[in-house]
Image (cartoon, rainbow, N blue to C red):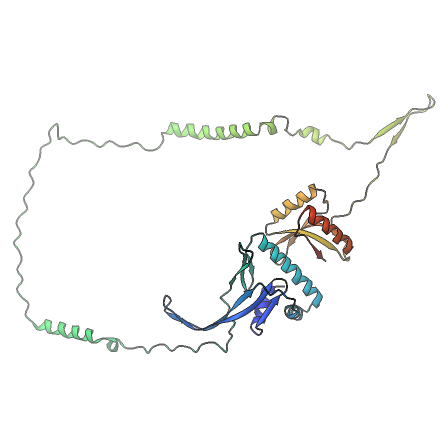
Length: 355
């Protein structure tokens, strides 16, 4: 569901649209004005505005989406609530969020939400569109001439009939040849000395051989323990490992009987599967949302190290985030009790996702 798109559609017919838990959207009228830099007149328009103080519950948006998507209203309300939680969580983490067809949101230092509207959409609609401005009538080159141009043309015509004055050319003197200077030992031409640039072939060969050896030596020095020391991997012992069993021998009562071998089987403890059963109502505890998948996986690994064996990361949601869950439950009360523990130990922003 594209929440921003549906809010934009409602603003063409409604004065106010409220996103419950986030804020109020409305439009303001901007009259036509002349822009000197662009040398054009901008048409009157309406652009979207945002008021973060009005977060009251309102069914206008949820009913409109339910009608457009052919989905039940409770399901749409749950989706909007989860959408607003992730939106607020992203803003608190310092991220800039874009709402399609509406604009950009960011959290200022004073805790208020800064809003930059999308000015590409005019909510004034067709009735308020300005009339087309007629282009000026095109004139022929003769009509476009000014009075000054006509006076200049008349002056040039009069000048053609006046006799041209005799032109006198100045007498050019022959240029004197410079006296030839005979080369003397002191003034004999000096041959320019060519400057050598770059490295000699021998130096290039030494650099070509020495630099790779130097790099390899540095790598070996800093990784000596992993290659040859105590931390080196023993591949032979790794592949030779076999599962061990605890074997007890019972001494025979008589010499004719062979010893019996008793193998103790350890009790297998059942562990809850990381994936819930299909078809059942499941409640997930969401502890974080990330734009990058590898950041979500880092948090999953950290939770598993702390004992959350069923921690996992969901795929990208419609907002473009990867959700990280602590665990899942079939009973809502059990999930709420564990949520209180997660708030104290892991994250105060954790919440329950119904699926």
